[in-house]
Length: 166
Image (cartoon, rainbow, N blue to C red; front, side, top):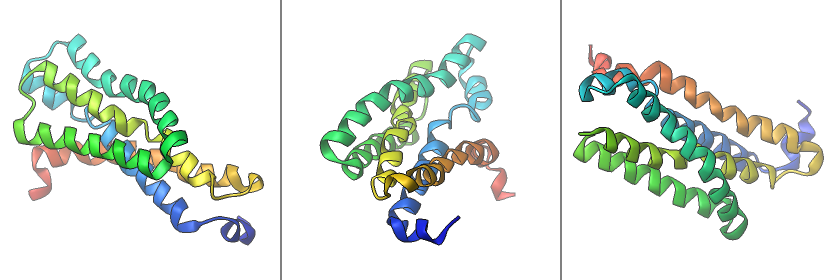
């Protein structure tokens, strides 16, 4: 990578965008790695388990349109803050009250969809700081934040079972 890239834009914003994307994607797919445990606890059918896992993905896809409009209207940082408040509130409610029913998992999935909408926030946040000749590289670095899905799959089941205490 040319040194001109690092001088052309704003590295702290690029790294923040990557971390925002990475953490958002960890949360977005959380129901997938935990599906076996949740389905067992709630006695879900295979169809219900599939819908539970699909809900954040579908919600995230649809909410990208909403977040994209917000990014254009109120800027990426503000849109990202609103999205993260919704995600944190959803997780906090689930943690405090638990997931007692299949409907609760679907409601959590919709809230987690805002984390999946991070595409619409992180990529414009990163690319707007770079001239056209460097935007592809900036988008590639910020977009590498989708690695958060791997971290969720690797660590969420162990953390949920308390295996990290052993």
